[in-house]
Image (tube, rainbow, N blue to C red; front, side):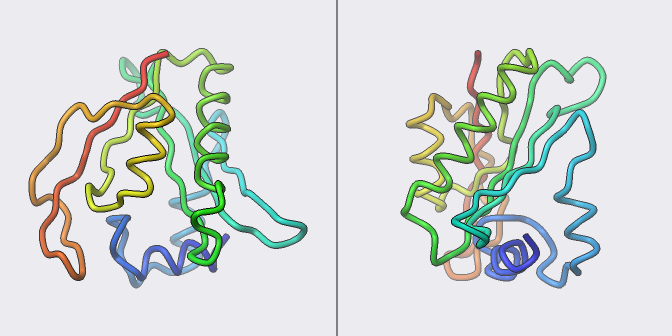
Length: 148
């Protein structure tokens, strides 16, 4: 997973992670402990993408799930993100969550936003200028929700 995480984080256009993140820091951030889950999408032995999922918040917020997805640049547009999203939604339903919430979807990440909308999410609101995009400057972060 590290090559994908490194590639995505260093691009600085979809995730608010430190671009200097080390492999150990990525592992600690990305690999969920049970009851959360981390998965990969593969083609043979090649990892094309990865997802992590779990409760969005602890305690009184633990009935709502969340997930994050990363896809290798050369695997985008091939349905990998959609497959990972569907897997996360299916997992969350099986676990008994009431819905899934995304806290920070970069509004200029049109491919991801379109997948999420197609899979039943709605944009609940947008925090204007909350993300510093490397070429577009400050852009909004969507909060998105899918009720089950």
